[in-house]
Structures are given as structure tokens and as C-alpha cells.
Image (cartoon, rainbow, N blue to C red; front, side):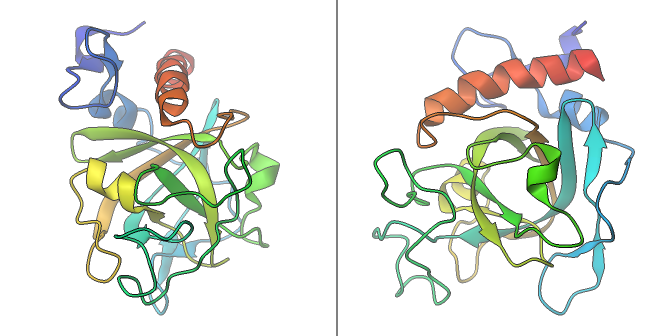
Length: 213
């Protein structure tokens, strides 16, 4: 059961005004240890040491990493080849109308391309899977929207970073550590571009995660 310490005001965590929502501290308390499921560890950035493990809890997988900024997908004023030297015009998963995801507006995270280290699909993770992304005292619900290099982990969309108070500029933004990603397995938001759907489902799954762990 949740205690008063498990919930925070909507100023601290994303949710609907007037509803109790799961706080960052309550979620972080459940991911202190690690039952590792990755066959090895990931790098946070190219050239860095491999230190990040993918771990498992009942109903979720999680990892603790940095946050690099993904601006791939739909071209916008904030996300394009001028603002982002690594810009790609497509994302691994698309909107319900077949167009690319909008990194400037849609909170989404990036998972590593399936490899011998970890195949996200085998863990019940797919395009549209709901994630709780935690930085300091903030929780942002997002979806799995893109895949990245097979040996690097810790990346999220411009919109995710901005909502968490992290500088979202793809050139100089992001944060070097302190971000926790909790992916609720076998969940899926449809359509993937529905952020309100991610918030509603994320709140419910976060509460269940606390109860089950």
C-alpha cells in the first residue's frame, strides 16, 4: 500500500491536477538494487567505460544512466540538421499516420538496438512501451520511440529533457548522470503519439509497480 511519502504534488511529478501521483522518491526506493538481465554493460557515450547495467523488477526493467538528447524524426524549429549535427529524419517507430515522431513535442526515450548485450524485445519492451523517467525530484512519463547504438544507453527526446528541467539542446544539452529509466514491461500506448495516454497508463503502472515490489 502507498504511504503519504509515496505521493507528491503535481508540481513535482507529471499527472492530472487533483489526483495523487507517484513521486520520484517512491519509485527510486524500489530500484536501489539490481537483478541484472543484460549480458554485460553499456557505455553512456562513445569511448566511455561500460558501466550501465539493465536490471529487472516485477513488471519493469530499469537502468541508471545519463541523458543525451534525441532530436531525430520530424523536422521542427528545434530539431533539424542545423540545430543537431547528428539529426536523422526518421525514428525507429512511427506515429499512427505513418509519419515520424516529433522529438520536440513528444516525450520519448531511446533503447539500444538489440544485441548480444540485451534484446529489449525479449524483455517485453516495444515501440510505445511506457517509461517513467526520473531526474532529481521530477518524474516524466514517456514512451519508447527510437533505438540507438547497440553499445550505448541513456538518451531521450528534446521534449523529455525539457520537461525534466534538463537543457534540451542536442549540441550542448543533456546531463552526464543521475537519470533513472523505468520501463513498464508488456505495456503499450496506442497511438504512440498520445502523450496523455502515456501519462494515464504510466500513473497506473507506477502505482502497480510500487504495490508489486
